[in-house]
Figure 1 (cartoon, rainbow, N blue to C red):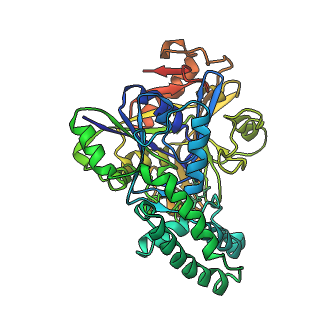
Figure 2: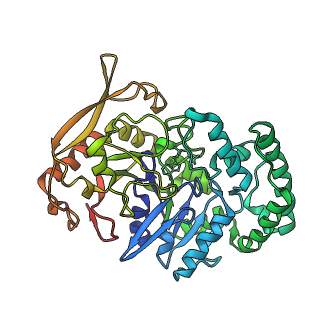
Length: 429
Ligand code: IMP
């Protein structure tokens, strides 16, 4: 009766949707436990591409229930849009299949306006957020004045609480940021309409998940973002406002750690980052362009949510070991190995150098990465197209060597390697 947890081991965008989609074949439920529509999960099934921001990726499998846990912040407008898009493509999104925790928080237009105003006010010191209102919604949650999904169970309650919320937010928008106020009546009317659509999906998802786990079925907790964007353990302040680490799955779903099974750290065969913040293995020029792609393919390194080009670099084993530790990873899933084909050489960052000293671990965590220079271990690359590989033995010797160095340096076994965007393009070890 395990709760298997899928974690982004880097700064998000590791391809968790792919891994969730694959593991969902054997799961009863996939559950999101943190973040909101700042996430973007892409799943390719044959010629069909599904881009999900709020709904769990496992929903693409007909037999799987999707849960949006209490740790999430949900923009109701975006939720309804995403549900409608899936329904139009024949995916069943009934209230039996899509359940929202009554304790999840709601994102309003005021949160989005505050997110944008705060970033503009920070100027060059901005975080580089997705502008989806994530930070302000979590701020309201922690300040104990947030709007919870349960308020949508009754359209009148929803309208009243939204009006009070907009009045408070307007004070900040106008007073702190000099921005125009929002029309509280208009937002309240909007939310009263959302209430009708969303109310049937609101449930005690903690109780539901307990029942499923106790019945011996598998729940997949689907991480969003990544450990290095965690509010406590990431590259603070260049982080998101939630807990994407594995511990967040327990608080964000209302499930105890006794159910934990596999904790799968998903990492690209290289490394990317969107938004601001330190990135010791960042690379530029032709090498970066090779890793990023042109933007013509949906899997190229441009944000699913914002379209921003991602910063690209080499896999950083110091950060991967750190991620393994804070998440208690039991194994690694490597994605996008195929992207490295054709690069003359491949590099792994095995340590850092700063002021003449060498480091295998960060002395004070990743929020103090500035000034650390990567020490690389280089190896010959490979030219073969690896997309047809289905077993390790199908891979070129150089690619197998690269994977075995990752295992040795991270101290973890690799259980899956994705070698292309399609569902089947996967090596199961
Ligand atoms: P926020 O989550 O919109 O507040 O953004 C905070 C930071 O997290 C920014 O650097 C974003 O680019 C980054 N971020 C948020 N969600 C994702 C994601 O799903 N993938 C990658 N980066 C993300």
